[in-house]
Amino acid sequence: MDILDPICFIAIFLFAISVSLNIIYIGDPVYGDLANRSVALIALAVLGVAAETFLAIAEPSPYSGLVHTSIVFIPLDQKSTKIILTWLVIGFVGILILNISLGSLVSGSILLPYIVFGTASAVGEELFFLPMQSITWEILRFSKTLKRKKVVKEAISIIVISIIFTYFHIVVYAGNIQALAYVLVLRIIASVQFQITRRFSIPILTHLINNAISLLRML
Image (cartoon, rainbow, N blue to C red; front, side, top):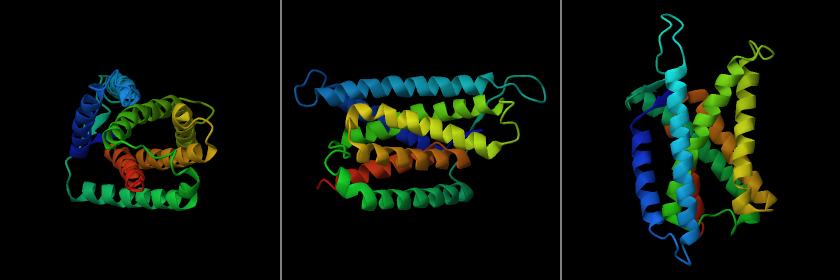
């Protein structure tokens, strides 16, 4: 069951503002590429939300046979805040370790130079890849070969999405192996956060923190 909270809606609002600011530069000789990528992010986000919605209404209830939702909204109470902060700290530590170990190798290629696009890409990519992870997990749930092997199914869904996410970034980082390794590990961190907590907000915030740190390193 996937969990939404107020942070998710704030992130989606920021995403809408960010892509709107970028789209106005379509055709611009300097920022046109970012504008085109923003259009692609909109398509990915819409596809991801549509997939998550379909997943939510297509899952039959084991009790009544009626369709029920697999998405729940949870307010930011004390328990939710504690979970979010705990996993954000774990993600932040992972990002710091990545920057310390690989930062000097990928500096200048891994960093997104524009704050607006950094925000849009963080939210837009998560709105696509998190639902894809949910779908992968749902497909594996019905595997007879992996029956009663929950940890294996979770690991497979994390690895599959992480590899696809990294392949998606080949367009940006081309043959920079260090940069792609950074992206792969970052995706694994976010995917583990989501797989365990089922909260959209935690990997979204982790992705935003990573992009913010990358931008700060440019100053």
